[in-house]
Amino acid sequence: MRIGIAGAGLLGRLLAWRLAQAGHAVEVFDPAPDAALRRDGRGAAAFTAAGMLSPLAESAVGGARIAELGWRSIDRWRTIAAALPGGPAAFMREHGSLLVAHRGDAGSAQRLLARIVSVPGRPLPRPLEADRFTALEPALTRGLLAWELPGEAQVLPAPLLGALHDDAPRVGWHWGRAVEAVEPQALRLCDGECRRVDLAIDVRGLGARPPVPLRGVRGELVWLHAPGVVLQRPVRLVHPRHPMYLVPRPDDVIVLGATEIDSEDRSPVSLRSAVELMAAAHSVCPELAEARIVHLETNLRPALPDNAPLVQHEPGLLRVNGLYRHGWLIAPALVDEALAALGLHAPAEEAMHA
Image 1 (spheres, rainbow, N blue to C red):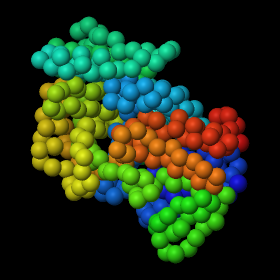
Image 2 (image 1 turned 60 degrees about the vertical axis):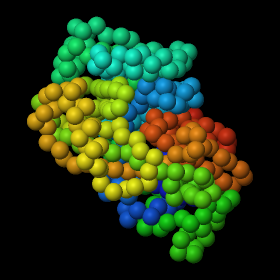
Image 3 (image 1 turned 45 degrees about the horizontal axis):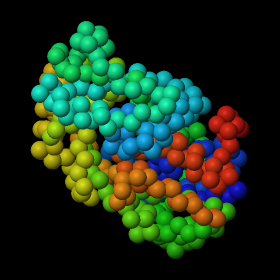
Image 4 (image 1 turned 45 degrees about the vertical axis):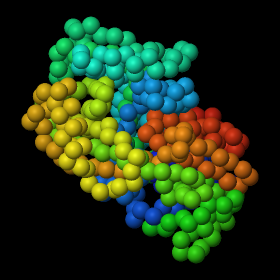
């Protein structure tokens, strides 16, 4: 089958890789100049993301649907990472995560925990005694309320996006070519060309407007270089005004974030956001006091009015969009569902090792 994909972000690369592995002829069109990582807030939102795979924590926001997709996606990312050159350790870590709160914010933590969705066969948060908490993450502030979120994981976005591109050499990657419209069996490019295909896939993020009623949700991150500060797993701080997460990365880097602003402003990180995020981080991990700020980053998450992901299909056309803050968490399971609905779903091992 000849397949044309509009958009080379997370969904576009994952779909292209999967479909090419299954033997389809795939072409991808994207306005970016090339496949390289971008830090200017103009590229794919997936590059900016922290890469947390948190079905427990995110179920408090997204409900049962997000939790179920998230748990299935962790299983799928494990298989995908094992199939890519470099092996799982280059792309994924599975050490669970922690939820913490200052004692004065115990009520906020309990309200969040009460919203977490139970999925049959999957674990639930476990409260941590002080000694166990300190043993798991010695760098964190003593005396915090803490819960372990077993089964959660993280991916490394930039290496994984790069590998999905590099491991799909049979895909026709068309950089610097924006798509104006996606129609059944056709991609209409901004330069006037129309590409005829058997299946047209629209995963352009915010570029899919107006047919998809998307809005941008601004996110802001701080990258810290913190030699000697050891974190084994992502840590979320529950706070009524300044929720925050810390995510360890290779080479002594810790990513700090959690701002969520209903705005399509792509300007640099504001002073207020940076100060609030870093103050919250220091309150949880005092050893970060001497960390160096590598850079600050913004981007826009594509979201629908109900914040739920969209999957639409009809003969010759597939649209997947609106992953909001759950892109890395749910993308593989959502792709599985979309391909299955089109009759293109191959068993995981066949699709990845064909």
